[in-house]
Length: 529
Image 1 (cartoon, rainbow, N blue to C red):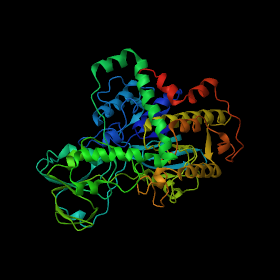
Image 2 (spheres, helix red, strand yellow):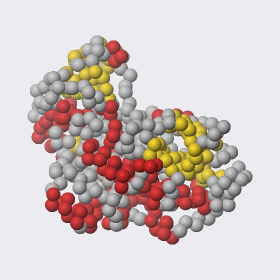
Image 3 (tube, one colour):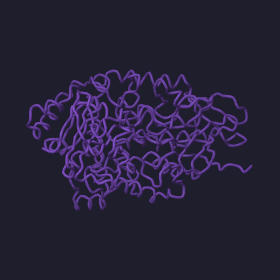
C-alpha cells in the first residue's frame, strides 16, 4: 500500500487566520506545510460574503496584518472586494500559492496515538500531519432556521453568505430575515432596486453612524512614502479601542452616553414615533455587537420598505407569517440569520486521542487553553478559538497573538522531538490547565455587558455561557499568548508512548523577543508587504 503524503503542519482554511498562519510558518523557517481550502480560491469569509453592500465595520488600517500593511486602502472602512483583493495579495506576496490546496475540503481528521500524528481525509485525497492548525473561523458556516413551510416556498431562497448573483432582485418583493451586521448593509443596498422590501426584526440592534469616506490620494501617497504615518494611524486606531474596553468589561453603566448617541442617530432619520419605538432596543448597548451604518435608518424610512417587528413563524405558499400574525407576500427570501459560531461544524470532523469528536468534547460548551488547544486533542490548535472574539476592535490583532502562540508551540515541539527516533513529539493540553483557564475567563465574563446587558446574542451558547468573546484588551491577550507554558501540557514522544515530565524551554532569544512584541510595537515596526 502506498504511503500517505506527510507534512509537518496542515492548516485548515485560507482566510485571515489560515493565510496568517502560513506566513508565520514560513517566517519560522517551516516550509513543510499545506493549507487545505474547501473552496476554489482563498479569502474565507471575505470570499463567501459578497452580498450587496458588504463591508467591514473595523477601520481598514487596523483590519490588516501588521506584517503586511496596505498603504492603498481605498476607504476608511473598506468593502468586501478590497479586503478579498488584500488577502489574494498576501497569498502572492509571501509565496503561499505552492502550499495552498484548493478544492480540498477536510472530511475527517483522526489522531494516531501510536505515530503521534493526524490522519486527514480530504475531498482531494488523504494525508498525515504532525500538527493541525484549524483556521476555519466562526463565520464560515451559515445558519438557516427551520421554518415550517420553507421547503414549499415557490420563490427564491438564499442566505446572505451565499448570495445568488444570478438572481436579479430588481422589481421583486424581497423579505429580509434578521437585523444583524449583514442585514443592515443589505437593506440600504437593495432598497432602491426592489419593488418592496420587508424586514423581519426579532430584536432591534443598536446602530451608530459609520464615518466612512474615501481615503485621499494624498493620504495614500504619505502612507507609501512615509511608513511611520501609516503606523501612527494604525496605532491611534488601536489605542482608542483599547481605552474603550473597560466600559464593556467592567463598567457597562458607562455605556449610557453611547446609547444616547445611538438614539440621536436614529431620530435624525426616523421621524415616525411608532417606528422609532419598534427600532429602539430594550437592552444595554454593547450586549449585542454595536452595528455601524449611516444608511440603515434612512432606508427604513422609505415608503417602499416595511418593518415587521416580529420573527418569522411560518410560510404558507408565497406568504410569510410573522409571530405576531403579520402576513407578507414575497418573491424572494434572504436569510441574514448568522452562522454556526458556538457549534462549529468542523468540530464534528475532529476525532481526538480517546476516539471522541471535538463536538462531543464541547457539547457542554467550547473551551480551549488560551483560546488555542483543547484537552484530548494533541498537536491540534485553533485560530479564533473559544473566547477570542472581540466586541469593539480588530480580530486581526487577536489572530496575530494566536500566531505568536502557534510559533512558540512549534518551537517547543522541535526541541522536545530532537531526541526522538522520528523527530516527533506531541503536546497534549492538560484538562486541569484548560479548566483553570476557562474558569478564569468565565469569572471575568460575569461583569461584562455581554453577560449583564439583558440580551440574547450569538455570543452565548445553548447553555447561556459566553464562549465567544474575550473579556479584556487585545494587549492583555497578547501577553497571555506570548509563549507556551509547558507546565500546562503533557509531553508525548514516539519512543515511549507515555507522558513524560515537561522539560525546560530553550527557545532562542530572538524568537522570544519576536513573540513578546506588544500591539503598539507591532504597529510602529511594520515591514512593507
